[in-house]
Each structure stands twice: as C-alpha cells, then as structure tokens.
Length: 356
Image (cartoon, rainbow, N blue to C red):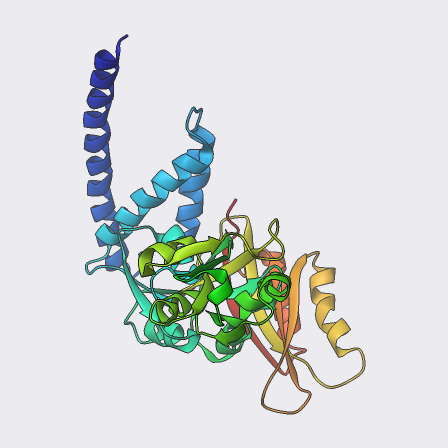
C-alpha cells in the first residue's frame, strides 16, 4: 500500500484506540468510587505490578516491552488522576528536574500534580499531614551507599514504604561559561561523591559547594558568574544551561539510585515482594547474630543490612534490613514475630512489590 492508504489505516486505528482508552477511563471512574466507598488507597502498587506484568506478557512486538510499559505508565497516571476526587499530589525532594523529581515522573507519570520540597523531612511532613498523597525520596546509591537522612526519618515517621523505583543516574557538567573559567561547582554531596575522580582530574582548582539537590544547584548556577553545576540533562533544559561534559560519573555502568515511595497505607502482597524493617539490639555478645537467626530458620533471604547510629545513646545503633517476601507471608510473619521478642525496638517500614 502507498503512504496515503497506510496513514488512513493509522487514522482508523486511532479512532478505536481513543474510544477504548475512554471506555477504560470510564471503568476507572467506577473503580475510584468503589475505592473511596471502601476507604482503600487510590494508588495500589500491587495492581500496578500486575497490570505491567500482564502487558509485557501480551506484547508480541514490534513495540519493545519498555516502550509499551512507558505508554501504560502514562495510561495509569491518567487513571490515578481520575480515580481521586481531587487531583493526586506527589511530594518529591528538590525542584523541577531534580533526580528525585525525574524518579517520581517515571513512577507516577504526567497526569498528577508534583510538589517540590526543599528537604527530605518536608517530603515526609507533606504526606503525613495529608497535603500530598505520596512522597518520593532517595534512599541509596549503588556507589555512594545510603542517603542517611531518609533512613533517620523512617525511624520515627508513621509513613509506610509502599513502592520503590530504580533509576540509572547520568551526571553532567552544566554552565554558561567555558570550563577554564569555572571557579565554583554546585551540586548535592552524593553527586560529588559519584563524580569524585572526574573532578580531581578535570577540575582540581574549582571549589565545591553543597546544595540540597542537583536541580537546586542548577537554579543557583544560572544566576552566578563563573559557576557550574553537576545535574541532569533535563535540568540543563529547564534552567537554561549548556552541557559542557556528559556522563562524568566515575562508574558509568553501575550508577543507580534507589528511590522509595512513601504512603500512609501499606501495599498488599503480590507474590514477589520485599519487606523493610528497622530494629535495635541489646548490648551483649552475639546479639546481632541472634537477631538474624529467625530469618535463617524460616529460610528468608536478606537482601540488605545497614547500620546507623541511633543518636539517642553513644554507640547505640539501628539496623535497617530488607528481606524477600511480604510481611503477611506466613514465613515472614513468623520470623518477624520471633525477632520482635528479641529486640529493644523493632518497626516494619513497609512491604512493597519488586517490580520486574
């Protein structure tokens, strides 16, 4: 067929697609009413996982699974905005074009509202007080490790981890002056850590100034002379900066940041989940080994263990643990029950789907 006939076929299919999308949206409105009547959370990570897994299984190409998933994430974003009586609002660290804002966009799409927060406690507070429905915060980087402020906030907050997203991070040197004129570089301390070697070799004389987020650094750089920042390509577009060097992170292949989605309610089980918890131990020989025994006896795999000072007593520590399974799974519930009786303090931070 010639181009005109092929385009007519596309137009015909578009009519069907738009009609089906609106039919789907009509059902979404009914689902939203049922959720509100039964006081259920509008965003359900377990259903999100189920839909995306099913779509990947149905796909026979030529669209890639990644492309189809991106399309459906936007469809689900539109559904989320329809299900809520008022527009859904997502709190995130940093202004527009921060890495956390980009992670939030990847998770929730373009159809919801985003509220920029100056710091991690502000994200928690916005969700706790009901100003926002969900919050997105960074928790760890594959090279630089834990975002300690997030861990500290999780101890005392009533919020639950209901989902997570992993995002490859590419850092870029942005400025409106040439490299030889740069005297100051602004970015977040975690970002500086991920670009340490590149900075030592290429910008040894530049002063480094910490900012709350990489996007805030871009905002500051746009107003200063002889300044640069390390931030995303999106930040360059948003704040009118030039990209002087791309991908300056020291580990290009494995620079990934994990972000948590915070909610006031728990996520349900999916069959492939992760549970996060924090506990403190009694000060005696072998205490930590004993704490890990319930997981071993119940054949539960630990995927992470991280210690943090409690800040309540010298040399007193909290241990943050991620394990496979949902807190409602029998084996996990049994292990957590055994652990709780051995701890000075224990708190389940949330169970959430492991996305494929």
